[in-house]
Image (cartoon, rainbow, N blue to C red; front, side, top):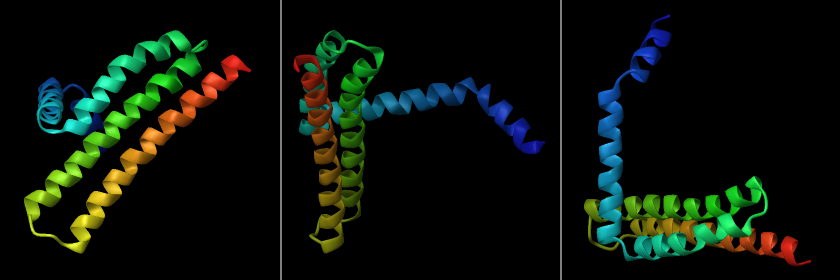
Length: 128
């Protein structure tokens, strides 16, 4: 019963929701200001998202086309967070730091390959 009460109380904590939104906006502003890759991917999103809405014939196609672009932004933000954390801990080169940064970069690359794959499949369906 106590857990249910806490969950219901948390749903009504609008101050926490506002603070969380403000932290999220600060993170987006920081990424736009400091991360060139994020800016490039935002430009890609701004160009391709409207095309995804136009190009997709069904709701599912539109969700896949635009959603895959959103995934790239999410993964880039997480990669930037990993890089900032590693840099905060130490600027000196370390095998584990390099591995963490490389894995974050690999995640971004996979998300970009997912965009290419989804867009290619939808294009193939339209033009076959």
